[in-house]
Structure formats: structure tokens, C-alpha cells
Image (cartoon, rainbow, N blue to C red):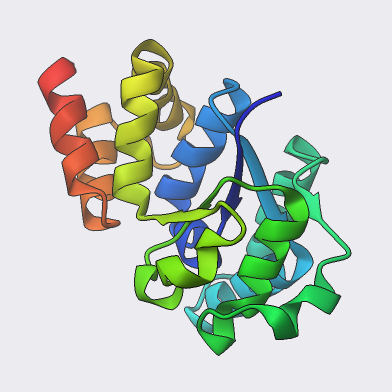
Length: 182
């Protein structure tokens, strides 16, 4: 079974980064996990950002259809016992309940090592997570970077444009590493 990874809302906010992460997951590089609360938060922040509600709902529905085993349930009773940032206790509780080894998040300060250690969990920035995936599965990672923009039709996107998007999304070290390969 693939390595279980809880994706925090902020890691799946940007469409390009989400597409890359989920394409990597489709290639068996890791197993994505999320909760209804993470997806609800994603829905809310995307709609607040001006994304069409129907488009947001299609995105979340297709995520669930592509990864039916990603949804973590039964974590709610753990929330009050989590020692991380109050607003992210639901994330850590879902990670614990789902058996995740890693929480991928831009909000590393919200997940202090002391709060994670007892669960043998680590919080990892998306840039570092992608670099780890590149180290472990170089061929698959490069394939994913090429595959994602090739799937974009309206408008079409080149690999270089996609890498620019990823850099603006907060993963510049990964982009530099990929650029050195391709």
C-alpha cells in the first residue's frame, strides 16, 4: 500500500499544485488522505476567492471519485486532544485517524513537532514533499510534471508555463530541481 499522506487545505488550494499532487498519487507515489472538514474548508476558501461554486463542487466531487479511499472519517472525537494550532486540530486528528505518516501543509507553524511526535507524524512543506517524491520516484515525478499541463486545454499550458505556476504556488525548490532534469 502506498505511503499515506494527509493533504491540508492550503496544499490543495491552488489548482496546479493540486493537479500535480493528485497525478503523483494516481501514479502510486503516495496515498492521499483528507477529511470532509478539509474539503469543506477548501470549498469555502475557493468560493470566497471568487471561483464559481459549481466549478468548486465539480473539483471536489472529482477528487472524491478519483480517490474514494482518501476520505478519513471517525476522527472527530480526537480533535479536542490535539496539541497543535486550534484551527488545525481537525487536520491532525484526521491524519492520526487515517494512519498518515505525513501532513503536507504550508502552515508548518501550526503543527509543532511536539504535537506530532507522539503520533509518529511529521508536517512537511509542499516544496519539501515534492522534492522527496522526486528523490524517491524521479521518473514518475517528471512524467507527472509533463502530464498535468498536457491535460490542460482551455487554455493550453506548456510545461514551462506550468512550472512558472508551480513556482508562484510556493514550490520554487521543486521547480528548480525539475528544471535541472528536463
